[in-house]
Structures are given as structure tokens and as C-alpha cells.
Length: 207
Image (cartoon, rainbow, N blue to C red; front, side, top):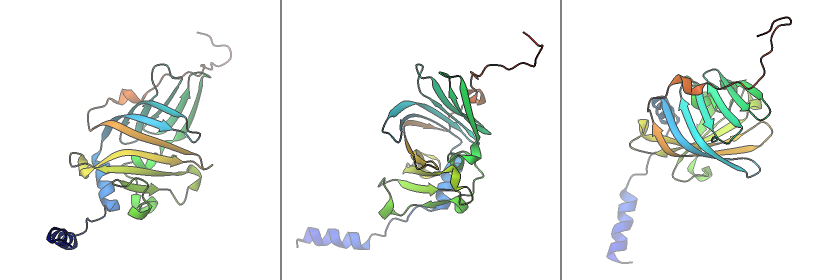
């Protein structure tokens, strides 16, 4: 063993181990992230991919635009998450808090009750902080495994980089984020949508 090797070994032994990120630190970073804009790549359970842009504004607002040629839109207005299918003129809606994304969009979410930091040995994304969240009282809404990348320039030193959602049927959807901008102004009007459903009027009324 050379002197250089001995010196490097001594440094490694003497260096303190990097402290694991705590759930409190994750919650602090999420709380400091008021808005987020990003490009996204979404991979469905069957391997199909979709791309677009995402806007997020806490509390409760998120929007996934799949491009001008897409016939669908996913948007949450603060209370409801809507899946809009313009091709068939349908809108499906759920309370935001009753979806896996609720833990990311609700600033009052109690992470200590529903989430845990995944140990390094089980982390599928080495170098990032992985957090698994599932409401034990609502297993029917599925679970989310979200990832935060260490970033000294981000609020709390952590930047949301993507997630994996598993629904109640076991289907996995992965979202990866890129070109991220944090805490830039986003208007509340960005989370509205054109409702494609036909207007139903009471009998006898026209116009």
C-alpha cells in the first residue's frame, strides 16, 4: 500500500458521514416551494410516453399541458383535480386531497403521518432524496414516490425532480421534470380550463 493510498484511507475514515435528509427537511423544502414551472416526460404503465409543460402553485394547483395537438389536459384549480378529454367532451374530477398529488400540493399535509424517507439501500434514484407517501386511512387513492435533488440554489436546498404514482390497481405512472424554475410568478388564471361538456338547460329555456 502506497503512502498516497494510506493518506486517502485515513481521510475517508476521519471524514464524518453525510447526514441523511430528514422528513422535516423535506417538508421545509416543499413549504418554501410556492410555485414551480418545468418541462415533463410522463411514462405510462404500458411504456407510452407523453411530453409537455407543467405549472404548479401551492396550495392545490397544478397543470399539465401536453402540447397544442393534444386532446387532453390535467389541471387542479385548488380544490379539484380534473382530467379533461376534449376528444370525447368529458371531464373526470376528484378532490385534490384524495389524489396522490395531494401530498405535494397541500402545504398543510402532515408528512409525518403519511410519508417516510426511503433508505439509501432501497432508493431507486441514487443521489436523490426519495420519499414514499401513502395515506394509511385511504389506501384506495394509491401512493406516490417522489424525488428531490440536492440543489443549493433551491428553497431548503432541495428541488422536486419527479415522482412515480401507483394507483389502487397497481398501475405505475412516472413523471420526470426538467428545465425547472422555482418561485416565479404564476397567475391563478393558468389553472382554469375550457369545459367541453355540453351545457344542459332546464326544459323550456333556450338561448
